[in-house]
Amino acid sequence: MVYKVVIADDETIMRLDISEMLTNAGYDVVAQAKDGIEAVKLCEDYNPDLVIMDVKMPLLDGLSAAKKIISSNYALSVLLLTAYSDKELVKTASEIGAQGYVVKPIDERSLIPAVELAIANGRNYQELDQQLEELKGKLEDRKYIDRAKGLLMSEKQLTEDEAYKTLRTIAMEKRLTMSELSRILIGE
Image (cartoon, rainbow, N blue to C red; front, side, top):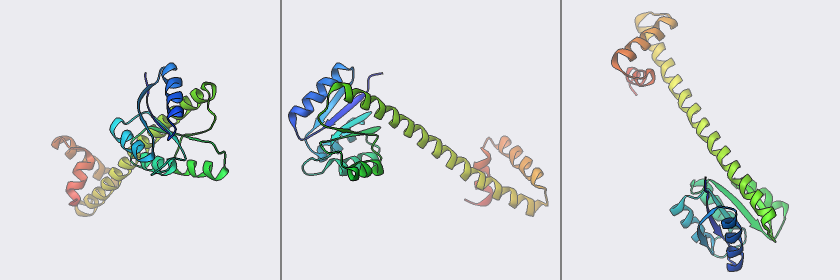
């Protein structure tokens, strides 16, 4: 699979060097930005697998742009570049959800493994997010089913098992999920 990458750095030479390294390694550099505002817009337009972004950029710095890109799901992963290995910057990068952090100067030997790891971490986060959403949905469904069971138990004097079987039977007859039927029964 060819991964799409957006590069954001205010230094033209740096963008070109990174682009060449990535292209040589088989990545598709879909766009380049010279500031954080362009980076956000390009990520929104291209929805890349990875955005490689300098921390220090004009108009909108890399950390602020990365925060916007991550919170809006405009890119799968963010890899930050900086000339500084300041612990506070690393901490902030981690807090906003960046998947990697590389200190300049950059060479292909250090960049490509960082890129691969950032993309893999982004995929892992995406899968965990999807699993979390599925679990939240199942928990919400379970709450409605339990409320509907309680309603049937009190109105029809059924046991919990009988109420569950009744819900299941009606749902099958009406071609509804148990959650859909439960929401109808409790009026939501």
